[in-house]
Amino acid sequence: MSVDLQTVKRVARLARIAVSEADAERMTGELNAILGFVEQLNEVEVAGVEPMTSVIPMEMKKRPDVVTDGSKAADIVANAPATEENFFLVPKVVE
Amino acid sequence: MSDLTHLTISQARAKLRAREITATEITEAYLQAIERANPALNAYVVVTDDKARDMARASDAKLAKGEGGSLEGIPLGVKDLFGTEGIHTQACSHVLDGFKPHYESTVTANLWADGAVMLGKLNMDEFAMGSSNESSYYGPVVNPWRRSRVDTMVMPTTHQGDGGFVSAGGTRTARTLDNAQLVPGGSSGGSASAVSAFLCAGATATDTGGSIRQPAAFTGTVGIKPTYGRCSRWGIVAFASSLDQAGPIARDVRDAAILLKSMASVDPKDTTSVDRPVPDYEAAIGKPIKGMKVGIPREYRVDGMPDEIEALWQKGIAWLKDAGAEIVDISLPHTRYALPAYYIVAPAEASSNLARYDGVRYGLRVPGKDIVDMYEKTRAAGFGREVKRRIMIGTYVLSAGYYDAYYLQAQKVRNLIKRDFENAFTAGVDVILTPATPSAAFGIADEDMAADPVKMYLNDIFTVTVNMAGLPGIAVPAGLDAKGLPLGLQLIGRPFDEETLFQTAHVIEQAAGTFQPEKWW
Image (cartoon, rainbow over all chains, first blue to last red; front, side, top):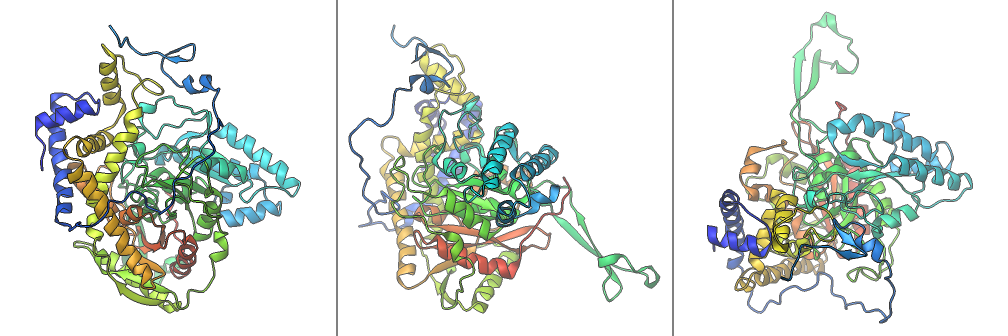
């Protein structure tokens, strides 16, 4: 499979990365080189093979359902570009 | 003072405990070495000198009382991917500008609890995506190793007496270092360069497809990627969560064992951390390998591989045979599919992990006309080319209609790769020996690599299989090529059998020796 310019622009939109026309054209070539490389996976016979879900067979660890962390709102917003009273500030979302 | 930086961790540990040297002296020696070398090598992105001096003083106080942990007073460098409280942690990306976490990664917390001293944060490929350390926002790291040319000249008989350069036949050999700058490999290029150039006693690193082992091989250092789940991933910036593992880069096998013992732990904060006690890896070093079964996978003999790599591999086989190991040919038939499967799985996981960099909670924000515009502009400005390329691939393979064809197929192939290894181990193979990389270090700004991303990806052809299967792998220096550049061999072990890797790697080290770059910086 290969991608065209329109697909690259759509994927960039999904990935929330602004791309110029020139970027998109360059990326089309690069992405097709990579997709061409991974194409060879189609020749592998995978009938009856389960997809891997865990590299080491282990049961999901569970812990008691109690609060062990928290009450550090100031720490959490400390690195944000814009905050007010422990809230993250973003451009207006709702008209 | 400066030769304090040439002590291995085990040597420095003995001298510190015997109080022949102090943590402050060795820390100052490293800080001076960094100050002199870093403008040329660019291995550190931040030097935490005040913190290093404070930590060294605290270590000296403990050592004076006969106390202290297993790494008390040992100065280490930390890859910029590890969260370090109050200190620059940016995965060498523009998008994380100014980020200083309010927490400490489990791996670095373990090292500090054992008394290690932090010298600073080490350069790396942006978000650990790369094999040359050229994708860093902070510029490429330079390999302390350079190519050299050996000239042999016949000397006039009257003009002998030039020390060690005179051979019995009256000829003289001179090694001339080439000026071309080489990459240290990646993504842990800063870690490998700093360890090799004596700018830290050892370093933390991470490995998603070969990012510890390939730079170790390119710099004549030892690097181990432990079994997935052995080191906690908590507090390490995530790239591909099912593949990422932390491990050390060190100057010899023993030092790597000492560091891994401290870095590894069982951590309730990482659900993939495996509940198994951490053994004393150092105790495995020096144990005989007589009777051990060493597998040689035929699929690792790839087209276009230089003769020198093949010769190195044969040398490694001979060394292990001489030490009493039994050599058996094995087949890992799905080897060639590991790299293409990796370039689906890793970008898919990366596209998901890197969705969090949106200009809201940390790092860079580029204003936009609305919130989506802000996200798009922030991510366009904040991510470099290689990172964007992988996010795009990952987004595409996970997008509606393509998931089965790409991601699901890759995860099935991954199971087949894992099964190949399981079959070999079930048949009685204890450890697998392969080359670590298909070539020695290449030049910075290599045109072929820049023109075709897949060329760069091929660097990981021998290492990526190990991440796909979750196994432990170690790269150990085994010799120099004709141009005087280091080459490494890789050993692959059973899950959680890092001890056999240290034991076997030490046999190779004993036979091959250790390698130091000629100082030009």
